[in-house]
Length: 321
Ligand code: UFG
Image 1 (spheres, rainbow, N blue to C red):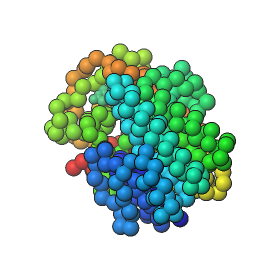
Image 2 (cartoon, protein in one colour; image 1 turned 30 degrees about the vertical axis):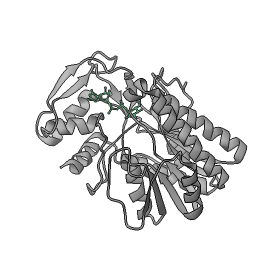
Image 3 (cartoon, protein in one colour; image 1 turned 90 degrees about the vertical axis):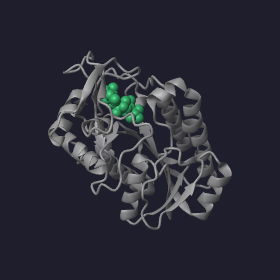
């Protein structure tokens, strides 16, 4: 039986496809190519270019590929864009995702692992953040992801869907062999921008704000290696296949790094300074987002093992050489 991977050409999705193929899973990718990335795919993986909201296409695909689980990565991911264009985020991340979910129900494909986000929490009152913490998203990106989590919950109760909503903190790093890389168009994520600035491929980094209530005044984030994310997905699928419920889980390390700490670590690893200018705060940036991974560790028997800052930066660097 196959796993349908939506968004399999994206950053985390492509890493998942390789990992799932390596453990012998049959994978079918559905991706509309909108991320503008074209990563290599393992032999034997079928890639269908199309939209998750195209019900005729999805129905046909679920039937023909004998899919028994869906890992749903496809979606819009830029926080800033979601503030200026919420219609797009609600359309892709909610309306089209609901079409996919309903096709799955019709076809009795009742297992789904969903890429959710720390953005469902908004500005947290307490860190580390636990799954039951208040969900007050401050942008349409977080709101659209949270709304789809509620849909999963309702489908679980009404139709017996087994689901996991994996709330990523700051995904980073790259596969160890350097074959896949973090790439977004446009790139807005800190670690790739830091590396490219140090290598002279981009202008100096703008550090967004030094007046946050953190240990050095810059924002604190919980960076999690894409390989650790992927291993959590594989464990979640295994549990769903055993008929277990998983629900929402934070995927992070429980330790945060500030922007200055990322810059300093990258300078040490690259042996050269990272050029940067201090700029104003970026709208919508919470001061600190750090996961409590306790529930994920307990439910999945999982722990992040490659997510220390030097490893994250070295792996990201190898993929960008
Ligand atoms: N930063 C800079 N300069 C830059 C880019 C980023 O100083 O040029 C800072 C940001 O202000 C932030 C930190 O680096 O404090 C990390 O920023 P990223 O853009 O790499 O990541 P975010 O924390 O904004 O976003 C991530 C995910 C989102 C998710 C969000 C949770 O990319 O998908 O965490 O709020 F929604």
